Length: 148
Image 1 (cartoon, helix red, strand yellow):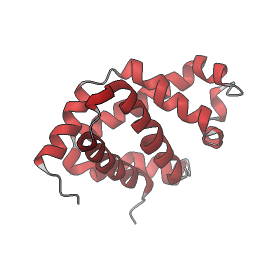
Image 2: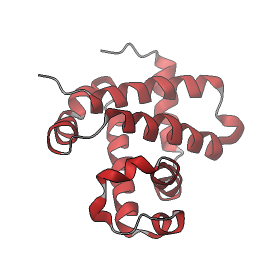
Image 3: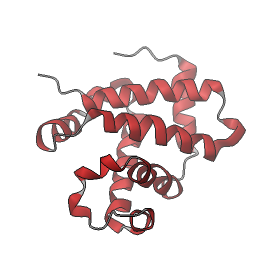
Image 4: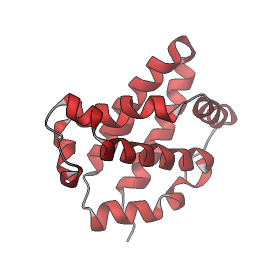
């Protein structure tokens, strides 16, 4: 369980409300596959991922990116119970797909923060960054840990 300050919760929710998923998706999810090519190994059925141009134009990558961001939105709206919100996704990623939890860190911590900072400019204050760091840490933990 995470203790959220009123301001932290508010900053995460308000920031998310300013995000245009269709603008942010190519910058986060696709960026992750380009900058961290080892993350591509889980997406062999997505077709051509051999270049940045191929990834940017890949419809399956784009569709999955929207799914990822929609699931992140679920966490925003369930900030007090992210672990249970992601219970099914956690099982899917750990037991069926055998995903590497470090890929979640790369995707959300690195690419996500870069995109937030670039989209928000000066509004991406240290307080906003700290709230999102905490939020994304909880998201990564919820996705990457299978409870037995």
